[in-house]
Image 1: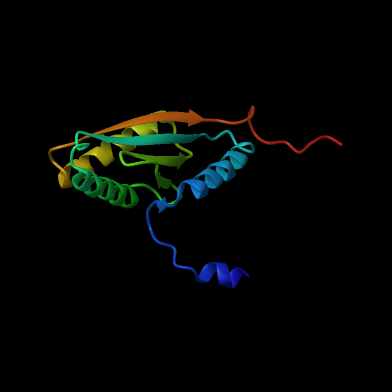
Image 2 (image 1 turned 90 degrees about the horizontal axis):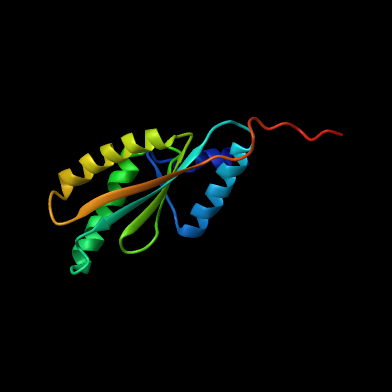
Length: 138
């Protein structure tokens, strides 16, 4: 089993997955948070200004996801929510960290798509429990 798991190709950058897998990975991270004092930041990136041009919007969203894959860390997770929104998880990141990430993503995105659309972000930090996990008392 170990060899089988290690044989798979592990690409650098963030992981892109569908919404169902995204939800499962969020719940897995959330369970991990129960044992630590870390947080996970949930973000949504939104594109506006291209609603009247569906093919340009789709190209911009594909470009945004490519930028996110390249610029986010290994372990970060991305899913496309709809035609204008992408959700992502930043494990072990605060909302302050997320703001820095958003600025970096915006710079990279606008180098590829300098005009025609606006990229905005929204974040919320998720923390679970009251400190480190402790085994149940017998």
